[in-house]
Image 1 (cartoon, one colour):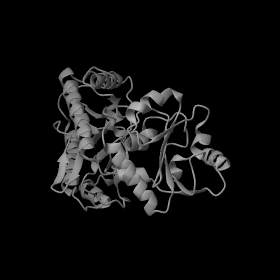
Image 2 (cartoon, one colour):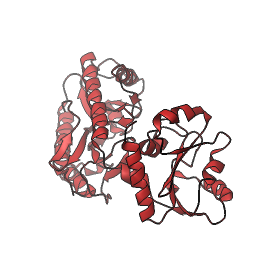
Image 3 (spheres, one colour):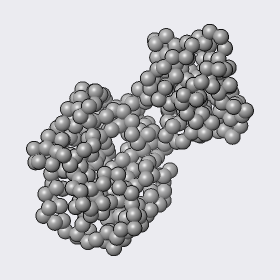
Image 4 (cartoon, helix red, strand yellow):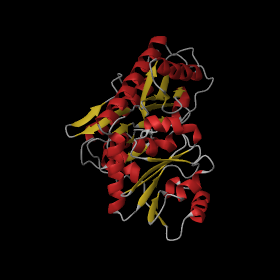
Length: 363
């Protein structure tokens, strides 16, 4: 058992005490009995638990983990012995309520109105529920060496899949065939799976930032935007390359070179203390000055970790300030409706010495 969960629980307990809470509930109270992988990210980071049904309750005087019969054996090997394990086979909410006393924090972004009502009905007299904004998400933001190692391995594996795709060629294959093959190759190389459904968008489909791979056959000499990532030890990667099997058109080359220049400007702006909106502006200004500002409609980037989208944000409205240990994407794009799209994305670690680029596949 890694010492990380115990140390992380101590940090959360200290945070709870500082904010006047006797305990903080950690986990998904939207579907507390069976949550998806991303919904369990806070719980996994805090306790090491990799299942889909679990809620932690942590405070200065309490450390408990609530799960059901399906996961009791897994909890015994994954969750530190410092946590009291509560079997909630009958129902999660009453089991959680029975642990609570005093002032208790809950994350309203991960709590449905229905589950809040059910929990309130089960509380003992004198227990007060109060909202707390993403307490574990804030602690998760700065990645430690083991987390960066896992993300780096996921990025390396993704780079390897890009090489495999190019070796096999693109022209004549369907978008779906490339996407399915890429995800299968990830698993062959040791990934737990893709960190999100892979995007393969050829020709005019490239103008759709979140295009879904279809049966369209990829033509020779047309741009193909591929956005994919892998999961290693629970941690995600995220990388986009725009490729061509053949030669780019003059129009495609113009757009591609512009996006690449913007991406390099964004990378150069990554630094400890830089504001997310300023990093976004560094890349966006390159595209705007060339007259394509209206065709770059999304933010420049986002944090990546146990979830593929997490703080900090790099966007026009971001209020985040970059810190050493942040892992972020830098991914400008230009999307010309009905014609083509180009996006280039790297995954970088923010360090005191500048950005450490984890995405090494050629651009």
